[in-house]
Length: 365
Image (cartoon, rainbow, N blue to C red; front, side):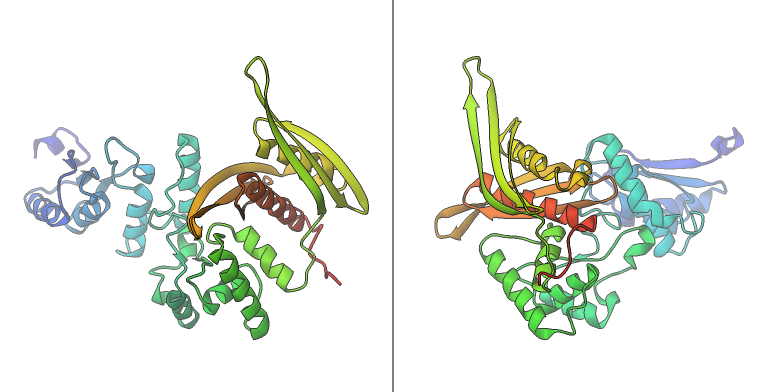
């Protein structure tokens, strides 16, 4: 082949318009392989949703050079996802393409690149998505108790991921038991306690709550059921107002009255919205008792309207993401009023942060 005679290291076949299917790739690469002695490569676009499958098919047909992009980033529908291709080559075909133990860095590197690219990680991305080893249906959870491999095609840890059990109103005792175990609590030895937690979860989620993406709120619920102290303060009242001034500027101000450390504290904060103002006021009040709150920041805020939960009324669900430099957690609040729902999620977020710092968690008695 003239390319190799001229010094080319590989002859790369390109599915540039992404229109091929695996069977076609297998046929073409096999044909070229039978005619050429040099190294063959493959480059696949994802216009048919087959870029990864086409790349694997090419390798099985004789290609030893695969061109991919991190997380499949690329023009149009993207390219073959490097992390998925490598995981498949290593785990499914038994080809050692990485140094020992490097595959478990997949999730960390995938998410780091997404952060640099300012693109939210794909939660359903194979192997490295946060939902790729997640289970929520009651039947699935029951099966997982019998055999981990029944619903997991690989050990999640080999790519740096974790198996997650999502707690929803559709799930039964097995899901809650597995979720508790995931968080470090063995609920199997106390059927009555497990039943109370399950009933509480089902009751809350029938009102619009969800713990699928709010592990921190679920852990607080479990700890409370265990009799642990999970509240770092009590609330006397809070108030938020929004004012549009004569120059057109819109300003929010919030006042909170709380009890913490044996003291009654009143604090006021200003922000670019009522939730931001409440967050600032609450932190200002509590930082006098809990100075470690200065290290906890609000990282994400999501609002969803849940229709049909109470007849024709709408219920607002708020998810708040928080971080302290070493961990990230999510809490949830539900109420007819979006600010009240936000307050619930903020309260859980701060309590969980204090729990992480060892300031809460003792017996309530």
